[in-house]
Amino acid sequence: MVQIIATPLSALADEPVRIRATGLIPFQTVCFQASVKDEKEDVFRSQAFFRANEAGEVDLERDPSLGGDYTGIHPMGLFWSLKPENPLTRLLKKDVMNSPFQIQLKVSEPQLPLKNVHSVPKASLTLERWYVAPGVTRILIKEGRLRGALFVPPGEGKFPGVIDLFGGIGGLIEFRASLLASHGFVTLALAYHSYDDLPFVLEKVDLEYFEEAANLLLRHPKVLGPGIGIVSICRGAEIGLSLAIHLKQVTATVLINGPNFIIDVPHIYRDKIIKPTPFSLHLQSNDVFGFAEFYRVYAETGCKDSRYFLPIEKAQGHFLFIVGEDDKNINSKLHAEQAKEQLRRHGKNNWTLLSYPGAGHLIEPPYTPLCRASKLSSLTTAIHWGGEVIPHAAAQEHSWQEIQKFLRKHLVPVKTSQL
Image 1 (cartoon, helix red, strand yellow):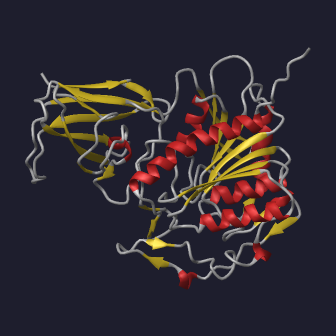
Image 2 (tube, rainbow, N blue to C red):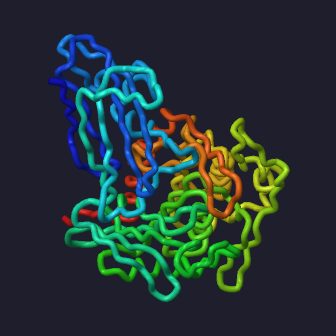
Image 3 (cartoon, rainbow, N blue to C red):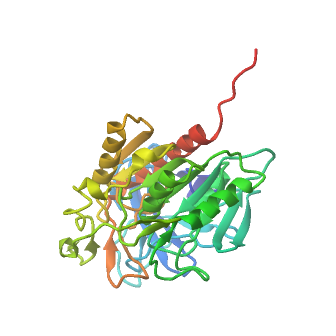
């Protein structure tokens, strides 16, 4: 009897799973399929073809995919190669606490993808992919003007504190914060537009709002202190950089595919106003599918004129720059290099740069499917984010481990032995 074996059946979404099939005919070619429904009932699917060995077994850790959505030996390929049936859909977990994504795995005979013809699977299995570990608590934050969700790991003692910032998608995005908490960080998923009573359209970035969030985090009895970390992407990384410069509370900042200047709305801190960088909209381009690419719109300003660069050398903490070299939304590789050189010129070595060829803009936790293009509520056109499936998946897996190492290194004091 054909059987799919997956270990573990239930795990965090950023943990690998070993997948095997047994009971096949020796040297038989079979199709492995994976599918998942998101919370809006949108379906994502992937498939790959394998040849069984002489014992009638396929092991995704050992055997290469011969074709399908990827080729080669990639044990988690069925997960990160999932594609939406409804184009421009991003696989995004909303309710992280109460339900996992359920991944359906099937093994069947290869056949042409004919309409209304479905092969009967030889075996099937359902996997659970959770975004929160047992014991992690979620506290909805609605204190003063702050809006967010605080995730606290289980256990005694204190943990490093982190603020998690997303970009133009807006709203309250929790899946990265809940995973960080699952790995031992008290993490505040902080909303700053398009959520609750926050402004839908961002007209300014009030850095004091984020300062209030940093202080709230540091007051929590389970936060280690004396500093906090920031994990940020896109516009969130623009804000993260600005916060690292202005707030002494910020001692470790992760910047994923962000600029080193202010994009399009001013930053305000107390009596200081930092103006946005002019951009050239005529340099926007569209890919072959008509998706907008914005990575060139600052070519005449922020990409070459240091007058617009934020004074990163004033930051007292450390930086981890994460760059997807195929980013079609921001020229993030150039901006990270500029920031790195700026620090170097001022005699600083408080940075690490991870630059990934073939990775796009939306570098997320491991095994998240590549989202090449999607829509933002604030724009009428879809955005091309870039990325090639296999190198993008590798970048996500590697960078996630590096993010956690970086945060622990700079937020957890080194214990010295006493003689």
